Length: 113
Length: 112
Image 1: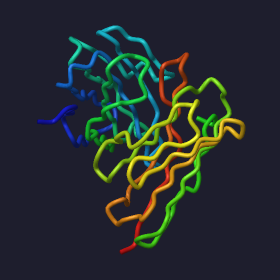
Image 2 (image 1 turned 135 degrees about the horizontal axis):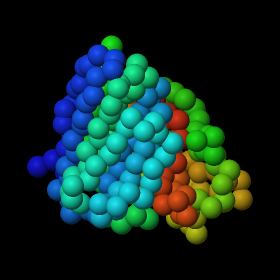
Image 3 (image 1 turned 90 degrees about the vertical axis):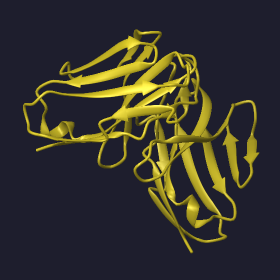
């Protein structure tokens, strides 16, 4: 049973479109994250939610909007997709806000044409 | 991300050899020093971590060495195996910000 699951795993779309990535964790954790990994494998945090409250919001274009309907879910919606948005997006979860152990999903590869 | 410098960018080791990956940091507010392992097509996973009050931690073939005065910590993989081939990230935690700062990654290839 997958601990942190993301859908879809692959996403290919045209510039200007809007897309969403969904994430669910069944670990009972209270904190969830979105990370972006670029083509050079550089990992950068985008957002973090603790008990549905946004606690980290890095410098990310406002075309990216996270939404946490409950503690187990954190979705990412991207408007007006650009070529530079092509990357692998990882969802992660942890127990507590101040932990060094994050549990990552398998990633969603977004390709913008 | 310039707060954390990871080296080398890539590493090729023969089976049975020792792999060493280094991470240098600038911010003395980092308070927890993990290494993450990422296989192709998978998300990163915590491999081993150390707190700054300890100079070394060993778990099986994996050892972290921590040098607080030099602001460096390293990952040693003894008896490297082809199954260790992956990308490794140091990711020290900035306690005040409650988030990890990932290094640029090291792609390790262990030849059979």
